[in-house]
Image (cartoon, rainbow, N blue to C red; front, side):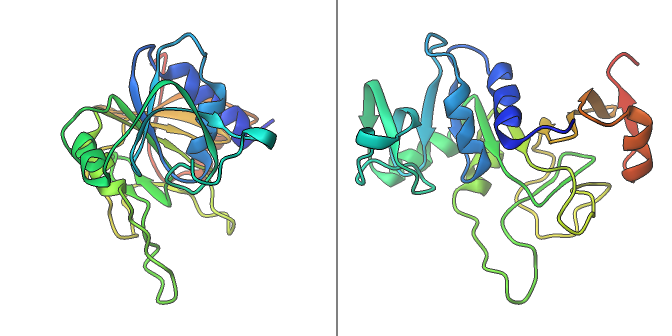
Length: 212
């Protein structure tokens, strides 16, 4: 069976090293916060100015003034800190984040990222801090469905949408497979409800097996 968004988030959380400083992009990547071990010492950064953000807030824990960059109510963990938006972007641009997790419209076989605009005349561009994160974080993970609603692949030989960053993506987590963007090519690490051969038939990107 393919993975749902919560299972994808759990996989991403599993791969984040204890003690990392991490930014979770708007949308599905925010779900990663709900799957991080409480004792891992992972510090979440949100670009609207907070460190040590906790999981999403529910019920009586919801404070309308305490939100992440995607306007989702969140909790704060002991030691949380707040700061100016400019300071937050300085952290992103200055190489202080170990990992960022972003959504995407497309990722190329070389690790190019397109996640802010589809290029359609009526589409609303929304770059936010994605460009800063793509070039500033030490590791860039993408979390997305492998195919768009019309069935076209999002993992492609070359991006056709406006680019966010060049050669910046390290790993891609999807509902059907997890990929590593390596110097030698796109490596399939795990598959879910689909075989390696079936992936090869549906994607125009040459694929490598993790075991060689």
